[in-house]
Length: 242
Length: 261
Image (cartoon, rainbow over all chains, first blue to last red; front, side, top):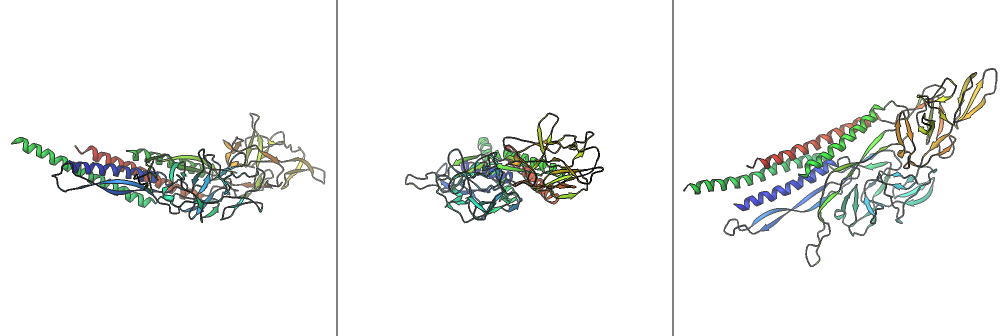
């Protein structure tokens, strides 16, 4: 009897976390370069609370890891020369306090000294790992699909998209940034598109159906707990009477 | 439940989005207006299991972790510095900048402000002023007896005086350009102020290298695109509704739990 309570409760805990992930996806529907998360589940086999109870082993649900949907988000044309998007795999490299960080959000702008930077002021790094500084008086740059930056026809550097062997395993650190988490980066084959930005890849319909699924499953899990409780109550009632 | 507060951040973000869109739509007919765009960023993540954590003493590791985000925040509201359409107005003192640069005007407080709105006029003393009467810098005074005024692409102001055949030069309009015009601070009345993000202005005559040219008798319309804004409004409204749905679903889940007994 305790088993059904515990299984029900564990299932509720996991469902609440799934709900948190779905809520976060929906909250980031308009976040540039956002990649949707999902939780992966696993069964954990445990011995029952009392060995005489059937079944012989009971299975708890467990969230083992979050899976990241790395699929391409829609490219929205903006016409801004400093809005960049990656079509295909890869990330932009930006400078962080503790080493480089990676992002798919290419809505960059120029700092007061002409440094190409993210909206929160982190410098965008070129293939050599240095910030890209434009001449304040110069013409707006042209950026080719391979990331070569040209000002007035002359090449001034290259912003390369970098890829990781396991992009799922990158750690999200907020502010649309990912940390490499010890993975070595290589050059990506994603194309850099100037004048566009990548919309969030959250699929609202999918998230909404997931939302319904979670709330129904939660009700069912609650019912397991309630049934277990009722059963115990009636046992106490009946046995106590005799 | 975190889902409640996460969805609340989502609703706040979409609210800001709608505010920015409505400001754009409200300024659809404002001369020289540059549309704005709300930028969002994901908030911090709570890492319950780190990706790459060891799962056994023999060195196997979890390929993926469990990271649960706590919502969204508004990163910034950026301005899209794209050229607006040029509209023929046939007014002598209407100027449009075709390309980079801002007109400089002197505010009553004595500061220099910058504007793309070139719907100028002449005040009682013959000075070239904005709609609000702020003089254009460097100051240009039109003589009393001028018959016609012409302003060239490169900002030379010439007036034909009654009784003369040749026009005479009476001034030169100069433009200011910024490395990061999106970093200028809007102070209302179509005016902008220099900030440390925009950088210091570089001043030159129109049509100089890196500067836009002037067009007399034209006005730069707002660069707001109605279709784009309305479709963005629909998306924002639906996103708001979906986040509200998350709140009601989380509420139902909590209710289910509280009704267990």
